[in-house]
Image (cartoon, rainbow, N blue to C red; front, side, top):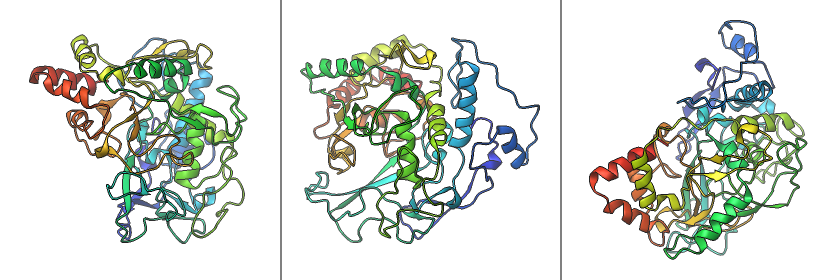
Amino acid sequence: MTGNPLSCAPAFEIDSHFHLQYAVPVTFRLSCFTRLSPALVLVACGSTPTGPASTPEPAPTGAKVDAFDVPITGLARPWIADFNDGDLLFSTPLREADGLGPLYTRAACSSCHETGVRGPGLVQKMSVVDDDGVTPAKDQSELDYGHTLHPLLAGGGKTPILPPKDDPRIKVTTRFGPPVLGRGYLEAIMDEEIERVEAEQAARDDGIHGRANRVQYASFENEDKRFHDHQHGDTLIGRFGLKARVPTLDDFSADAFQGDMGITSPLRPTEFKNPDGLDDDAKPGIDVDFDSVNLRAIYIRLLAIPERKADELGAALFDAAQCSACHVPALRTRADYPVPELADTDAPVYTDLLLHRMGNELADGLPADPSVDGQANSFDWRTAPLIGLRFNRTYLHDGRAKTVEEAITMHRGEGSEANPAVDAFEALDAADQATLVTFVHGL
């Protein structure tokens, strides 16, 4: 992360006991699990600060930086200070003494979103499916502890959540942690913009019919009212997560704390159901405070979209191949969004934030359920924002595509809404295909 030396990274080894190939934290060189200044962390890690701690000067508005893991330009000093604090917390691994566990998947936000980009961490899901291998079975009761695998233990946990053995009805799938670059823009987009695109697609005659994932706000009331005043149970448009099951970035942060780390917060104050019946861990009570959740969320909100080079021919081909029908180049943000640099602007996000049926080949077998992915079913995926793709090493939700071209062609499948776009791409000559791929890779 920005300002954090590599020597602060946790050491990992692969635990061969789990065939799922999870990285298991075995030692931590950094023991900063509360809000610490970057200067103190540098000293703790054996580096010497170059000068007295100071608030960085804000970058000039409109400046462009071809980099990732940096804040958007033009921010006032208080936002930059919060970004830096959140950046530090985002990369800090948590321990049993901090409330890690009793079951967990990863020990730090950066394990799945390192330096704001994709992975390297992943989450695995499981579902009971019908004989076709992709349709969710009506009876999911065999999965007593939910659809997420939790292979790691801490804070008193003794029994991991793993797939039932030797049951061919259980489908296990992988989700890599998506990039979080530019996600403040996604939060700032007006509901009316998402609904406008949803209505326009409903009128299309080519089968591209995205729909908003209307979900419940699963967190409890946040004391920070700057970004919203949602109450537990409010119905909202989902925006975050691979199936748009989370509506806001504070909810995204609290959900990851609870679901991926077993860390409770005032927004998500209870441990998830587990085989040992534990409702607490090595740290009694709620594990982290509002600041721990909100500063991580602010770090994500303020991450910049890396600079893109203008390519008019590539953009024209992108539009001609119907890619822009779902990967909408820009959506308008709210005029009242509290970060002025993100308010009342055309956000260049290349997504419609809608769910689309992507066919049998990409289906994960998970049912549409409020406790799983909201209204998204086995075949549905939210249109991925095309932001910072040149920093990816793999593509699609499970990394099966190793190139942008593979990602495009793997949109094809039985029942996929993207089939006409794949046909249009493959109808281009080799030179135009290369131009289109280069354009997408540079977004």
